Length: 180
Image 1 (cartoon, one colour):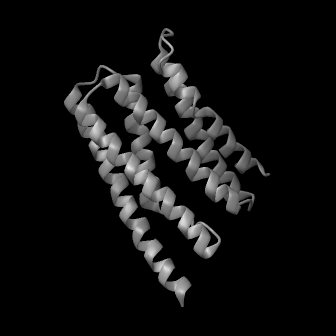
Image 2 (cartoon, rainbow, N blue to C red):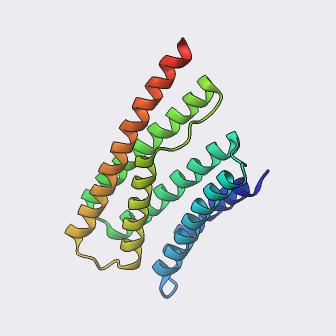
Image 3 (cartoon, helix red, strand yellow):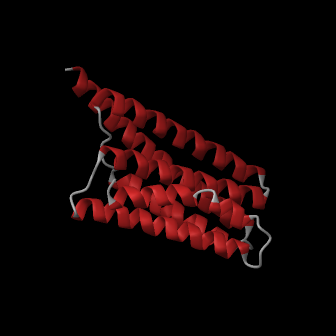
């Protein structure tokens, strides 16, 4: 177990902390939850940099890192949707969760077929960064106008769907190569 993988495990442990804080009723609960979300995102950046810089990229890390990211992202989005109680936002949540589930299944299939998980692509990193920014903004400023919140979330979901199609193209390419 190397340091980047420990950071990914730490991020996994932070996933349940976000909803506990978000719905705790504490003063500034949304700010505390946002701080934990930001800490988790910082560990995501740090574990990736350390893994590359120290040449500590592992198969386990390539599984743990996206798992922690997907669980944290889904948790944060569900927290925001529950708090907002807007049906249109739930449609975005549903689409986002479906996309994450498809990516998770695709990752497992890739792992079984090629015994590894290819590294992330730029569009995936951009989608994750935009999603983080949107969620953080909405967590910190829950009084944002509803149309703005919805537009931001739908933009994040659409960008993540673009990433899904990019990964799907790569997955199909790798599957064809593995068959040969």
